[in-house]
Length: 550
Image (cartoon, rainbow, N blue to C red; front, side, top):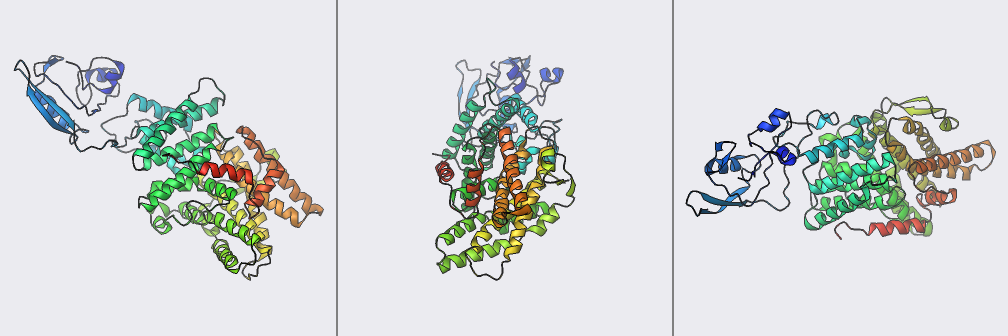
């Protein structure tokens, strides 16, 4: 008899299996993991006179084994039955019962012995991973490294990235995205132009599967994680292009759709936290409001148990402020063009006061307990900042710090442009705003040493500093305009050039195009309410029209 029910290990090794459960004899003798996975075949033809390993199995026993197995207890139903031509047996046909086309099995935990992500492990499932899935998890771990999640550089993409290993094998679209991430990580670590690396081919295959899935079934958590992995993979291999922006915008568009359908969950929020900063950046450069502005259910988010820690409280408060900043910048730009429109000016001032006076600094300070100043270890940074911030409790805490001060720089820049219109508002102290602008820029500069010296196989923490440092160039540029001469003016010009040098050095490390001083000045003017940089805005506008299901 053809062995339809042999274990996955014997099937992969193409050897005979006695089909004993829970562990067959071949796997037991060799000390290998033995797992059975029913494939829901539509037809099972069994002759009761067939002998397997000297054991006579009756039709009833075989059918009972099928119907009482873990995966198939409710998945099969009898479709037809007939007596064999010889009258010595019965052929029975089964079909799947009440099972949709895209149903996936329960997410398995990681294999015993996996050092990484021990916190995600639960009871060992009876249906173990296949050899292909086990190898994929091993390669994932090699790219991620052995650091704990709190200190893993890939944590700059949020806590959701640590959910991936426990979900490998649950959805083919997610598995393809994991393969693309793994190939991209290997390609980045071994060299961008290494011959034979399958990252590009895998990426095309994974994206095709993702788009097909989104056009044929409702978006779920597996798809959202797949989009997230596409974003990270594109960043690793195509940093010099805008392709990764497609996935940033895609995450926000998909989550906005899920919010309107009432499907917003903690996973959605984790993905928002991981990608909103890039979304805010693209919104600022394109002159549009953030996709999620006004859509996030913040009241519900605050009630989640996971949001009760100081870090998560500060992060959610900052998120709520940050996604409104592009709208403020757009309004400031409109006020500059039409300063006589009283309703427009009133709306702009109201939003500016809301963001400026409802500061999240106290929450951020509570989340960053333990951070201290220490002598700077990087010579290039020491000349400008002899002391730097160290002792961040986690990569997420470091990300919170630089995001807070970067958003503060944006807000101070927009307010200074608004107040330059001589708009009367007794609540704003222009001198204090200017000082806070410089203070936040200085904190960003004093955070570079940590980003350069923290242990990281892939310099992702260093990469995270690029956008905040570029925004801080606006602070030094504004100060140079106020103090163009003397020692103070020379010092600020040196800081502006230093920020340009550091950011371009990091971009060259990632083999990405660098910015000229003239282009960078245009960008920082745009993100504070100045004219839009048309070439950049046009590129982002083209990418924003991309739809996964198209």
